[in-house]
Structures are given as structure tokens and as C-alpha cells.
Amino acid sequence: MLSKSPKKAADHVLGMLSVQEIQSLLMDSLNLPNPIDYPEHRPQFERWLKRWQRLFTFRGESEDGERRTMQVPRDQLERFAPKARTTLRRIWNEKDARQRDWYFYRLRDDYNRLLLRLEHPYLFDVTDTNAVARLAEFDRESEARGDDLTQRIAYFDSFVAGADLFNDVPRICPFEAAVYWLQMNQKLMVYCAGPMCAAPFFFRSEKGQRYCSPECADPARKDAKLKWWNENRKKKSAH
Image 1: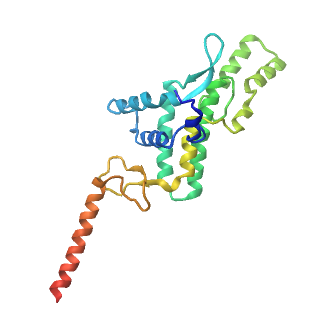
Image 2: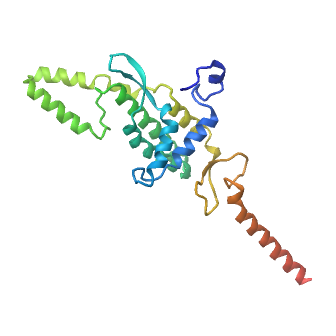
Image 3: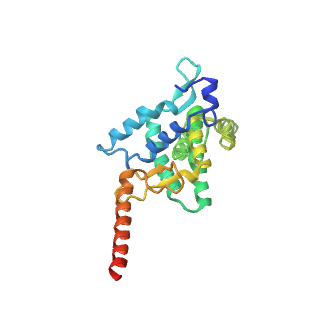
């Protein structure tokens, strides 16, 4: 559960998460395997799910008809997590600022649409991969009831009612806060220059940092020392 302490909330990005939590969430998401449904990849996704599913919530209707905060179902996160991983990697590697901003927008918008579909299952979203199937189902149900044209129009209107929600500014949530923070701190994103680095995406802790760890920086330091030694030894030999 997220802390409700006013003091802690004031230190959190958009009142949601600390910077440390955000960086951990982003790193874990960036380093998810591809694809996640390979048997050897499943354990890593399960660890990600166990650690972070608590942050992915929506306001849904429970069995007793009450509106409650509920966790996004794992099948939805199985589809969303790979999208988030791929988009974050594109953001990290993209040099063009305009394209990077577009990836940020798509990532935030995709997650907002996921939540809206869960919270308002009646909404019709033309970007939904199941949109055609839902329309066909609507048509079959209407025909089976024997609806006349007026009834079918009225039913369709109720089906798409509230679709303008997709155009509203989404409410603040933990994942939104994480992506918002990243968008405001793009200068901290670094891809480790170590050729053998197993997890090359990281946040720099000091200006000009190119390597995620001393281990990754060691080969470059050794090469630099060797180059300096060779150049200076040749100068001494020339004298």
C-alpha cells in the first residue's frame, strides 16, 4: 500500500512515489526479458509482478456493487509490461527530442486507456484491439433482441457514452508519476558504455558518468592507462 503520511507525500513525485521507488520501478521494467512468456523468462516477470503489481490500481466495481480500489489484473499487466519495457528502451536510446516526447506521450496514454477500459467497460475505444469484435457482438445482441433502428441507435449511444474520457487529462497515479518524473529528468538517462554490461540502462549519479559501475569502467580505465604508458614510453625512448 502507498503511504498516506502527509509528510512523506510532500516528498514524493506528484504525491505518489519517492524518486528512489520510481528509479527502481523503471529499472525493473526496462530490464524485463523479451518475450516474457518464455519459460526461462517467466521467473523474472513474476518477480516484477510480485514487487510492483500493488502500484497498478484502478477504481472498479466489486461483486457487492461497491466502487473500490482494485489491482490491475495480471493478464492485463502481462500485456502492458512488455509495451512499457519496449517504449522505455526507445526513450532511452532515442536521440531526437521530438520523437522521445512522442514515446513519453504514447506510454502515458496507453496506460490511461488501460485504466479507463477497466473502470468503464462499456466505453468504446477505436484503438482497442478488440474494437471490431465488440462492435460485432453489439450488432448480434441488438439483432437477437429484435431492436428497431431507433432502439439500435439508442443502444449504440449508451455503448459509446463517455468516450470523451479518453481525451481528458488522466488523474495522477503511481505509474503516471514515474513516467512524468522521467520526462522531467531525461538528462539522467544513460546507456552504459561497458561492452559486456548485462543491465546497461541506468541513471547517472554524477555529471559526465558513462558507466553504471566500476566493473564496467575498469576495461576502459585499463586501456587508457596502457595507451598513456605506451605513448610516454615512446617519448622517453626517443630521447
